[in-house]
Image (cartoon, rainbow, N blue to C red; front, side, top):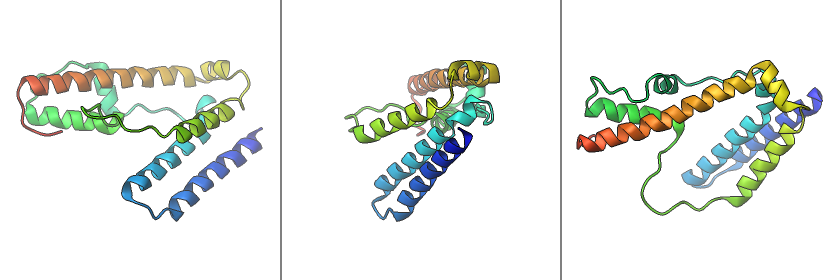
Length: 168
C-alpha cells in the first residue's frame, strides 16, 4: 500500500509540474495551474497528514487571532490595515462586493475524485487520525481559521467605523 501511495503521489506531482512547465498562457491561467498543482500536492500528501508523518502547522497570525480575536488596544488605521492584509495572506482573499466568479466544475470534480481515492487508501482512517493526533491537530487548525475569519471581519468593521483611508 505504501508503494502504491508513493507512486500515485509522484505521478500527481510530476503531472502537475509538467502541466505548469508547458503552460504559456495568461497570468490568470498560470495562477489556475499553480493552484491546481498546490491542490494536487495537498491531496497526495493527505495520507502523510493522516498518520501524523506530516504535521499540521497553524500560521502565527492565526494563532494570535485564536488567542484574542477582538483585541484592538493600541491599533491605529495603519496597523489595522496591516493586520487585515496579514490575515488575507493566511486565509486567502476576503469576500468582496461584485459578481461571483464562475466556478470551474471540472476542476472541482477532479479534486473531489482525487481526495476520495487518496482518503480510501487508509482503512479505518478516522481512528488512525485520532490515534496519531492528526484529527486533534486539524481541529486546532480549523478553530484558528474560524478565529481568523472572525478577526478579519471584526477588523474590517473597526476599519470602516473609524473611517480609515488606508488600504488593505
